[in-house]
Length: 202
Image 1 (cartoon, rainbow, N blue to C red):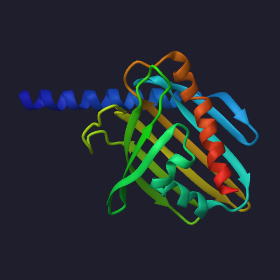
Image 2 (cartoon, rainbow, N blue to C red):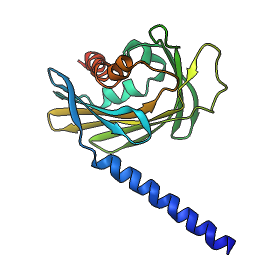
Image 3 (cartoon, helix red, strand yellow):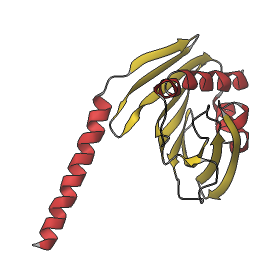
C-alpha cells in the first residue's frame, strides 16, 4: 500500500506540474515596449510575481556567428548588459558552462548576483543558448542577494539575408522589489539589453 501511495503522489505532482506549464503557455503575450526593429512582450508567470518577458529583434544582414561569439564571451557581459558590473566564466564542463554575474540595483534595493548554467544547441542556421540558475554552485557572497530562480534562452536564427534574435526569460530576484522596478525589469531593461547587443553586432 505504501508503494502504491508513493506512485499515486508522484503521478499527482507530475500532473500538477504539467497543468502549470500548460497554463503558462496558454497565457497570451502582451506588447509592452518597442523601438525601431525591437519588440518587448511580457506575460504572467505562475511561479513568480515577476512577469516573464520576451524581446525580439529582426535585422538585415548575416550575424549568426558574431552574435554567438558575443553570447559565449562570458567575461564581457558588463560591456552590454544593463546594470551588470562583473561577469566571468567560472567553470566549463564539456558542453556546459557556469557563468557568474553581479548587478547594481538602485537604492534601497540590495545588489544581486547570479550564477547561470549555460548550454548550447546549434544547427547550420540557428543557435539556442539556454540559461538556468545554479544558485548553489558557489557560496553566497557578502553584500549580494543571490538570484535563486532564472530560466531563459537566446535564440539566433539566420534566414537568408535576415537575422532574428529572441531573448526570453523568467526570474525571481528574491527579496522585496518595488513595483516600479519590477515593471522596468520586464519592459525597459529587455529593450535596452537588445539595443546594446545590436550595437555590438552592427
